Structure formats: C-alpha cells, structure tokens
Length: 264
Ligand code: UTP
Image (cartoon, rainbow, N blue to C red; front, side):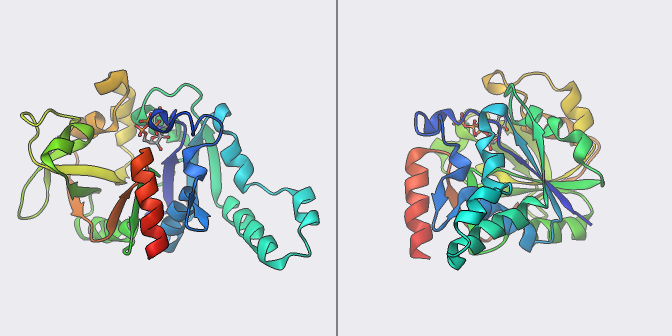
C-alpha cells in the first residue's frame, strides 16, 4: 500500500517574484483554500496517511499556517464558521511531518532530504505548481501502480514550443511503458511531446540514484535524471491522466487557474 507522500516546498519560486518573496506561492489562494490545501485534499482523498513537507527556514510561514495557535483560537471561538476552518488546518497538521532543505539545490535534492522519513517501498511525490482538477490524479497513479507493480509518472501532451520547459519522456505507445526521460530538452532532442507533470509514484530505490546524481539542467539535482538512470532496474509507466491541468507555477498560469477554479 502507498501511504506516504512528499511535497517539496523549499524552492525559491523565482518566476513568482517579487510576490512570492515574503508569502510562499504554495499558500496563495485558489478558490476559498490555498494551493497547498488543494494538493492535500487530493492526497488524503486517495488514502495517503502521512505527508512530508520539505520546507526551508525562509518558508517557515508554511509550518505556521498549519500548526495550532491557541491565542488565535480563543479570539475566534465565537465565530463558528471561521473556527471550523482553523480546526481543519490543525487536523491536517496531525498528518504532516516537516523536513528542511535550507539550501535549494534542486527538486531531486529536496526529495533526497525526505529520505529518512520514507518507510515503505513506494511513495508519492506531488508538486504544488501542478494542480489537477475534476479527477483525482493521485488515485489514478495508485491504481496503475497496483496493476503493474511499478513506478508511475503523470504525463500530459504539451505543445512543441513548450517541450524545453519540461521533463520529456520517450514511451511505448501501446502500453505506456517509459523508455527514456530527458529534462528540458530542445525540440530536436525531445523523444515525444509527452511531459512529466508533478505527480510521481516512486520506488524508494530512487534515493540511491539521487545520492549519486550530478547537477543537471539549471545547475540543479534533477529528479528526471535520477529516474532516467533508474530505468535500467525499475519499470516506469506513464499515466495520461484524465483530469484538467492547471499551471500554478507562473503568474499568468496562476491567474488563469484562479479564474478556472472559480468557474467550477
Ligand atoms: P521548481 O523547479 O518549479 O522551482 O520546483 P520553484 O522554486 O518552485 O520555482 P521557480 O522555477 O524558481 O519559479 C518544483 C517544486 O520543487 C520545490 C519547489 O518548491 C516546487 O514545489 N523545490 C525546488 C524544492 O523544494 N527545492 C529545490 O531546491 C527546488
């Protein structure tokens, strides 16, 4: 059973600066909740029992958002609607563990920081920049994992002009088995237009590969490079998920996502 998920939150969010400087983008609102709560809802609805947040000292406000605040609770006790919302955050916090990555060396390195917290053979990795609505993508990944007993990554076909922004896979078109993964390739080097979207179900042997992984694109430890190295020993299947993808990693993407969520 897949019971744990890692959510990396220690990045600098440079594309959202200066808005993200003091207020982490993961806490920005989407509808009446934050982006991060949307991701947590997806996890817990899919049966995940514990979530590991990778944060940094600079982003301690994320911890503060979830942890109990007795003096605040006293002040709002007579406002039941608001009190219930604060209580919900406290409830969520019981299932959250915090680990630190104070020097952001890349997504792969952030995942490695959570190594000690992972107990079972497979775990989930979710990126809050990628919101998927209308259908629970985590559930889809878990059911494909059960079928193939392997690692699974979420895929979405992107436009030719977008391939250099993503991790791109080469895959067998009939069974969606992954043959190759390349981080941010040029269009010429891209094996397809299928991009890795921020939902991964991984065998914990990924940590061995991450420990050996050299810096890749953007001078960062890239998880795509470690997964590509792992392909020799581990099967990976792609999940062309059914839900609607919303990009919350850029200002324009965030504004469009906010509008889309308010429509649904
Ligand atoms: P991104 O590569 O999109 O980086 O990280 P970012 O910092 O969020 O944003 P930009 O690109 O500078 O605008 C994908 C996810 O991995 C986390 C981020 O917080 C984000 O959730 N991350 C990234 C870390 O936790 N640590 C890192 O060193 C890098």
